[in-house]
Image (cartoon, rainbow, N blue to C red; front, side):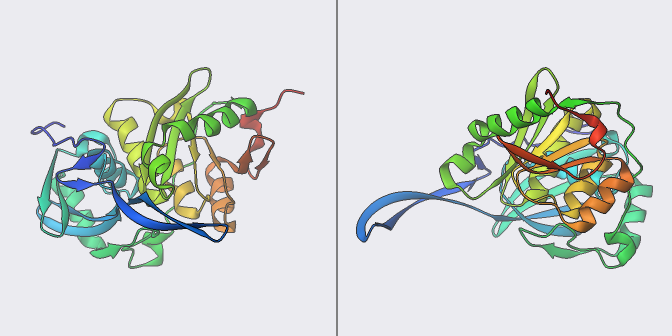
Length: 282
């Protein structure tokens, strides 16, 4: 970042907070019991503090928190450009992790005017919004000319499984990936919250100087409203989900020009909006 060096945590364990734990469990199969090791994902309170003022506490997987802070700040409209996140510091606290963020004074004043200081649960995508206007924000229409072959979307969804290190251990975290036509998956992020995984992904793209509109997103979750909202804010023109979209998500995708694909599998997919970006071989 422009001021200071942020703390970048290792994938497996951030500042003493592991992303998963090993337990000994009773496993029953066909009426027979065995004692076996098992792995369970952790969720940790992560407090985002802007200019020394607490804003929100999210329950998240404690990995890639610099990416999460940047992606959340951008997709929530707290900043309008990555360079407006002036500094990031990550601290271990007794009950969780605190991320101290510095933003320009005019951005902080806009944030303070929102009055948003609440706890975000794992599955919460609009946590902390105090008005309908804050919750239902409409991004500008995406302007990318990207076209993607359906085979590439399916290949990306198949490839993402091998890159889900935490989920392959625990079976309980979501992933969001960004793929470039002709090159495949270029970035993957995981989290117990689907929206957190997407924020981490977008933050990683912005932090490394990649142009989100050059690729497409695939997510291992349903395509809810806030997932489309964040995708559109990032300028990504196509998102494919392995599960279903909601009606509100479809309407937002139609309005913002996002190609929204649901139920994406090896042998099927459903295109809900803007099918011109997806090509099929016949």
